[in-house]
Amino acid sequence: MNVPADLKYTSDHEWLRIEGDMVTIGITEYAQGELGDVVFVELPGVGEEFAKGDVVATIEAVKTVADVFLPLSGTIEAVNEVLDDTAELINQDAFGKGWILKMKLSEPSELDELMSAEDYTTSIS
Image (cartoon, rainbow, N blue to C red; front, side, top):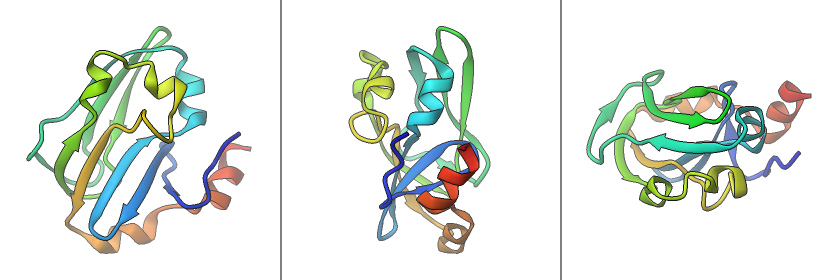
């Protein structure tokens, strides 16, 4: 199972790439494998503000529908509009082209609650 060491993770199987106060978020390879073939992603609006724990996106797969919970508070700065036409990118490249959104972090202390790659790997083993 691919779990890049340079990312942070949540128990809800999201990955986070943190660059200053900008955070890119997607779902992990493990999560997309559990969901099966992704067919649609409902994305938030750019400029929307969310609190930690809010549902920020919905992923529809052949087998099920899953909510994406925002692991940090902040404002949506960008969404991966390519997913509108090619939602399967989440299955094909979960840690790259399958990213879901980028946000500006408003509560830096929330970063302390994220898991390292090692901790995440242990949690899914």
